[in-house]
Length: 449
Image (cartoon, rainbow, N blue to C red):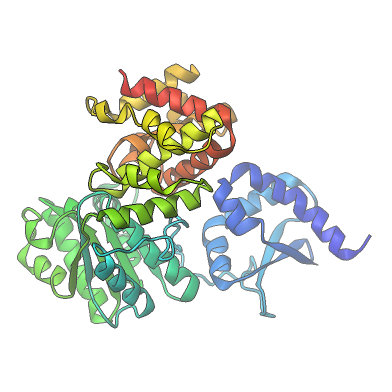
């Protein structure tokens, strides 16, 4: 047996444990591409393609890999990480020289500039976001993007992150929702069990020692004076070193209630770009892109039908397409105008009473006959994980609230977990008729209550 085969056998045992414990998107992105290339004592030497991947693996997945190594019980005790093209280890267990206050951000990989459909309503803000990504700190600083919910602000923000991660991996990039910034600030002051000065210092280091800071939904700063004070000083510290700041909001700075004047002027000191609702031509282009992503064939007349009377936001537009594509797969029929009209027949009367997180959680528990405690708990059992993911998916589909809020409703989970759950169920619906039917049955149960 060759040495390479020996390495692969050892790594396979470890990898199988990781596949069971990591989110699918995390595993496929960072673990499946790792190559075992050597044995260093009792450490397996792994090689990854890029420095960005290495940085993410060390900061986010190191402990998971070590736990999988222990569980595999192969005689391997740890790992060394190399980057393709380099002869020096990026990571060796006894030579950790990394900034523990910095963790590379994980955002939705679907949100890229390439997948964003630009039209007359958003071409200016699209160009501005691209300029900032290509030259952070050098053009528009800050870049402040505002517009109604569902028009693509978060898509653009995360496109900047994905572009920087790919093209400028050496930059320290921090993306966060404003709610998370607020909660972390409050925790740094009031959290028990630690020195408050140390916690505040750690919080400030996390947000001020970066090259690019992106904050989503800053309208939540309204009526929060202490948080505004902290963000003001963070903003000043970053701008003093020409670090890029990007912000999004539902409204322009002047319409955020009780926003301090000095912070308002900071927000208005760069470029303010509004994102308008898409026109019909842009809606059709968006539908074409979404249909392509779903590998669905949708005729032009159906695309035009879906674009008409679809409201002003992209989420509603995508929801109409999702219904039609789901109906096509469920009935094993091609997408036609008749099928589309039938699938959307309920859409006109779908303005039901407000759907709450509790209602969705209750429906999931009733459908799968599980307790609320188990659904929101930490168990990794498949019979609980999948309903939990479906719950997150339906919250994303039905409720118009931030991902951070959905994560909180689901037992205090991170927004990246919500993104993974949404992605997981979206993909399962395309290939698994049983899951597709269960999701649709639960959705109908929720909306008809």
